[in-house]
Amino acid sequence: MNAPLTLHAFPRAILHVDGDAFFASCEQSRRPQLQGRPVVTSKERGIAASMSYEAKARGVTRGMRLADIRKRCPDAVILPSDYETYSLLSTRLFAIVRRYTPEVEAYSVDECFADLTGLRRPLRMSYFQMAAQIKKDLDSALGFTFSVGLAPNKVVAKIASKWQKPSGLTAIPGRELHHFVAKVPVGTVCGIGPQTTALLQKHGVATALQFAQKPEPWVKQYFSKPFQAIWHELNGAYVFELATGEQTPSHSIQKVKTFTPSSQEKAFVWAQLAKNVENACIRARKYTLAAQRVVIFLRTQHFRDVGREVELSGPTHFPTDILRAVLPVFEALFDASMPYRATGVILLKLSEAYYGQLDLFGEAIRMQRLSNLYESLDTLREKYGKHTVFLGASYLAHTHAQHDGERGHLPERQRELLPGETARKRLGIPMFMGEVR
Amino acid sequence: MPRDNELMAVTGFRSTHALCTLVERLVDPAFLVQQAPEGLLSGYHFADLPILGTVTAGVPSPADEELTDTMSLDEYLIANKEATYILKVRGDSMIDAGILPGDLLLVERGVTPRDGDMVIAQVDREWTMKFFRRRGSTVFLEAANQNYRPIHPQEELTIAAVVRAVIRKYA
Image (tube, rainbow over all chains, first blue to last red; front, side, top):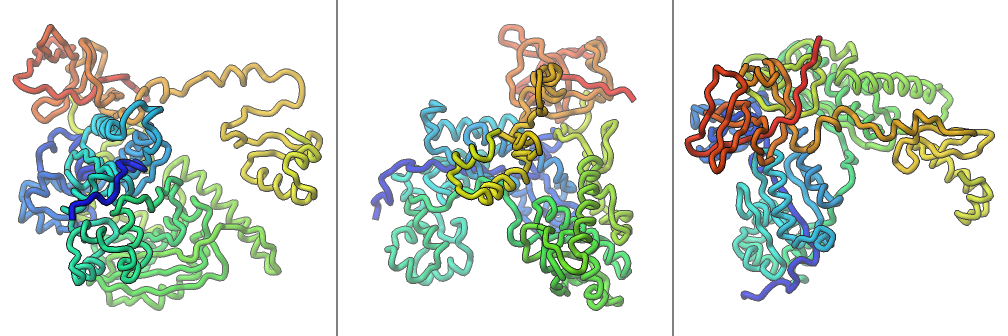
């Protein structure tokens, strides 16, 4: 069957932009010594989080351990992540796309969707010209390449941006859709996981086109709503809306941090947990959310997790409240014979924070006082940086380096401070690194 | 700001309670301010732009009006925010142009350099800061220091950025 799936070209024009090896490219673009060389980031995590195309060509894959990377690719440059710089550049990516359209969904740190529908007349360009212009602006302003896909919906736009990587620019108009999806294995379509792929395989569906050509009743019979939506999009319809607003953590807030070497010292492990609780609460307060339930967990050196859920007496976003509630649970979980390598906290049952309700026990007054206190602490944090003031409970976590040995290496930007910068606060402009002569 | 009875006419509410609830919701995120003698005033977030201040009577303060047309140091120094980077000077190749080791430069990526622009070029896998010179169809890089010879590129010349501002902070 070679019939088009749809006759329209771009009933909607959805763009997907994807940074090529984003973190590694951020590093290469600011250090000419690294260009053309295999670069890997995430030394502090002990694994590869992002690999330059040179490193990928040498067989380095995501999640590979540092020792294996060195074996496979001895000349690889392994760098600690500089999330501050990556975030600055990520913000620029979204800002540049927003020059063209206000409807931009920040999908992840290095990816976004944008709706260009209806902009041909005001911008005096075809959709393809817009996509090309956005790519050109990104490549030149950020100093590395992006892959851009243009299609009638999000699912196909993702196929388009992946079509040619790195530095691709692919448009899939509706009426040519069938040529493209015929070459796409159904398991690589965004949202179709290994379980679904296996099920589809049993029905003789191997490519995205074969899936798209199945009749709708068949799809409804075997698959749930999200997969039916993917089926519609593979047929050229527009189903998945762009989430253009600010992303708020509606479901849960999680903070997990590894430390090396592993520790058997109770006070130190507690301090690590307390620091995670403080960080999770900072995030909750940022979105004025309060948690009703908390999960804490400890990870042993042998990657075994022990954890427990705690119901709080009322919704809160203050670390003092949460720590008081989880201390007995921590005492019960902690096993002094076991070295631990990470702690984590998850805030659950989030709701809009509100302390207006008066009660018999003076709880509202206490919450109001805590709220005043943390408002001041948050102001201090904005002015002087994160953890300017912290709880005594997390003292040991703040005064010890998170990692020893090479995993504790700080990114160069954090070592080379400019006059007036502090370890907590730096200039919000990305920096070219290395000697400038 | 309109009075209660005017607001009721506009909103179509027939109860003052409904109106008060609406007003409270607008007061809370500081769109409106409630004040005893004047009734409702526009708040800090009214129209999404900070209001300079409210004046009960008489002439607005001339100082406030004039300040609306000023720009921040960021706006003054940076034209294309998304393409601007900072870097620290180490060498003395631009010393005769008044650029000293330790100075900070604001540079803009992705612009085509013109003759005489100060640029950041990539030479032998290192950043270098020079004047960009164009003579007919040939281009070369020239230092502002007699100890350095001009660089005539053999093949390709990569200009990463053009220098837009120099910052030297004392103390």
